[in-house]
Length: 263
Image 1 (cartoon, rainbow, N blue to C red):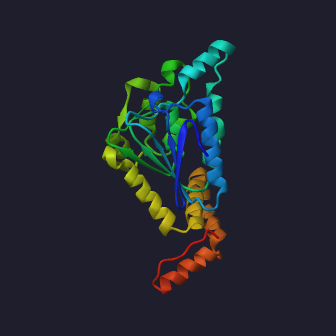
Image 2: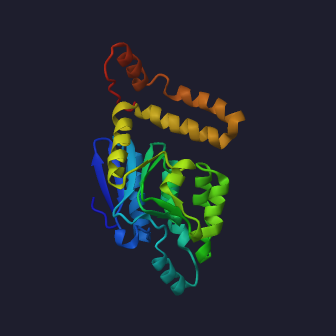
Image 3: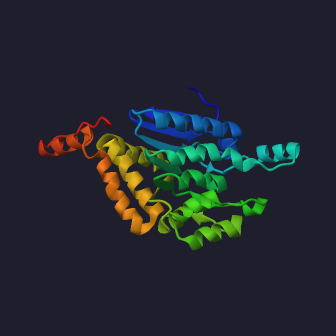
């Protein structure tokens, strides 16, 4: 399928969704969000797709968040500021998917662009990545995105990013230092690294085990230590007798690469 605002590339069991509005700093319009929702739905429902990379075209920006020009026009026409609502369908979808997401950030990552970072499982950044927020500068609340960031990095830093707005910017090395990203690479190596990580997962990890690990970790965080650790024991039993688990044991004993099938 051909999209207007995004590019989708598939290699084997890996889907790569690329925001493709570099002339608009890859801001997300109504149409962009609808296209993203379609791609995410297909990823969720396709048993042959095991990993997704999220990236952006161009060198200047990963994502500048809401397409404010469009939102402002609609506000002038209707008298109501409804820009927030266009993000909810695809962010809800992304948060509901147990398959892994790898986010490759280049250039500016602003405001609503944080959603993609907050909801990804592995985040890497190019050396030119820069994270900041402008919600309060245009009269909006940064709530959902910043809450997601607060699970990944120190609360005080997130608060400063949100409350000081455009005046407090976090560069790639600071993002690494504060735990937002797991690796910083040269700009021209960003996508190579993203595909490398995705390939490790798609070719050498059992998909049910990957999904179960994500479910266990996030579920434990949601529940806190007292209930979270027992919850992880429950998740372990979900794949105990699957074909992939048996294959993993047999391949280890037989000293060969396992052939996982996702069942």
